[in-house]
Length: 268
Image 1: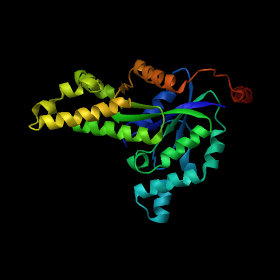
Image 2 (image 1 turned 30 degrees about the vertical axis):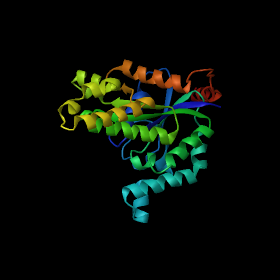
Image 3 (image 1 turned 90 degrees about the vertical axis):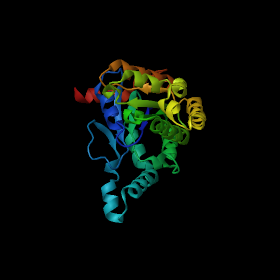
Image 4 (image 1 turned 90 degrees about the horizontal axis):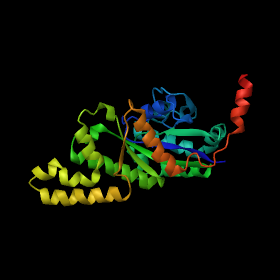
């Protein structure tokens, strides 16, 4: 059996949970199930199909082992991998034509020098999932050029670690009033030519060469092509889903799952 979905990642506060909630509540021609993989989550607005907190919770780990938040989170993810049979049993209850969103923790360590999330994605792929990573970068990264490039480099690092089809989504675009500025940053190939910092900095030649190299790097991996998320505009969400669907081949040769009929009969 083949399942489809997204691994929703990004820094804390980038809008991952809100993104999952909006997709689940909307009408996007798919039945969306959400899996919470963040053991530190305090509040979840969406209907959770699987919740890692039923297996292990960060607050319990911190209290029992006297770990800090980061160390406790690493322990929780290791515990999940060691008890993957629990997750597999939960995933077996998902219908084949469900579309699954995995709401992931925001700590960058899990996507850089620690390979836990890569191991997790490999387990999902081995379980029959065709998934992509969706890295959310919120509009606060557009405050200046250096911050913007650092956000793209984090997205690039995460996408290379996970070894999945990768998409970078600029979230909270509905809060951005300066549409010209938004357009400038989403067109990365013109970024160096139009950068205010490059034109004003006294070390402009060195800075331009450096930023140009970074821009070419992230663009070559597709990370620099930003997809804009405006939660007030269904068309922007449809565009994001369309790009991801094409990459993971969602909808190709998809047949109804008997579980849906069994559930419907039980409800009658």
